[in-house]
Figure 1 (cartoon, one colour):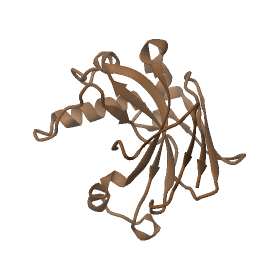
Figure 2 (cartoon, rainbow, N blue to C red; figure 1 turned 90 degrees about the vertical axis):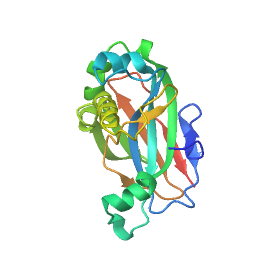
Figure 3 (cartoon, rainbow, N blue to C red; figure 1 turned 30 degrees about the vertical axis):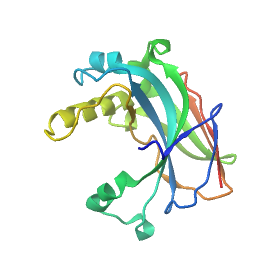
Figure 4 (cartoon, rainbow, N blue to C red; figure 1 turned 120 degrees about the vertical axis):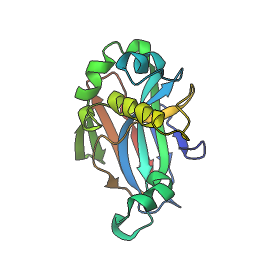
Length: 188
């Protein structure tokens, strides 16, 4: 993710131009902003390092026909990342049951009024918090990879399948089980 690919939702609403993205798809996710570098991948150290939690939506893309790609090509294509739409931030102090709530949280993904998909937090390596811990552990085994630092935003992975999006479509998300707001998205 780069500053040029980050889109700030206003009141959990965003309009996004899809022009320039190849075969875009929508992925609802959870992200964390770090107030400090995690000392380890333990739950206690991860929670101490998190400043806020937010619902986000990543728009991924693929330049290969029918999304038939390889791991090497995906990596060289910036992990298929196109845009990240960031919703309202909730300070971690307002989420006392985050560890227990993340695996059980539910998300509903809609296109217009139609429910397209339903997901739960546990499909992201058991929990978005576990995904953050996995990243911390993985980086610690890579001598040339820098560790996570204070100020970084980490998106933890999709809570549903990735679904194609197109101009003139309206999509929305609804979250249950955590005090995070869903989003309204309009694509142009």
